[in-house]
Length: 310
Image (cartoon, rainbow, N blue to C red):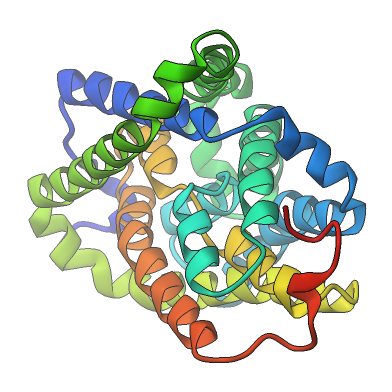
């Protein structure tokens, strides 16, 4: 069995182009669920907003970097973990927050703003932490990753669809309201289908190497959910807000990570396996956590506070 750093998973150019289109369509769907009030709402919840942004874009990548130093996985696995930590949240976090009896308004607003911030923050974060990694940096040097090129790619599949979605809300609101839900469902199912296809097409590699990443993914995901929860509690946010932030930080858009891995890293083995396993485990862990919270009452009466929910 070849070392995981030496394998390249297969995903043909036509399929990759289609996957880019599906992901752009998914971001367009997120934008259709976004309103200017989502951004204004966060201004009325400055502490929750600051904690959520700091946990996602500052603490989680740093904690992930520390985890890779402790576990000492192969360089490509370490880079995969760092890339996933730098990804923005997916809109499945909004569904899970609702299930967990958390602040859905905060979750929806954070998803919108975080995806906008990720256009710039994601390539910078990955270049910084990946370049700092003692073994991963050597692999990055051999690949000659260009953060500007990654930024342009993220802008194409996140930024432009997001702006187009906001324009649709502004100028064709009737159409938007009618089609946003089916568009969101179709795009999400298509993305899941492509992740399944990527795994199925490289099933032998996933069987050979899943054991190398499963424990790391489970620990990493647990730390991601925990980071959001601990930060929220440290800031003395309500249970209502804390549940939303925990899920918002814990759910990462592994589909975007997979697109970037095939686009910029030629399907590099450890990175692709991490993203594929994360894509499924993250949803399973989120469902388990949300289900557990759904059976537990909220502390206090935070859900009734003015300004906390709309």
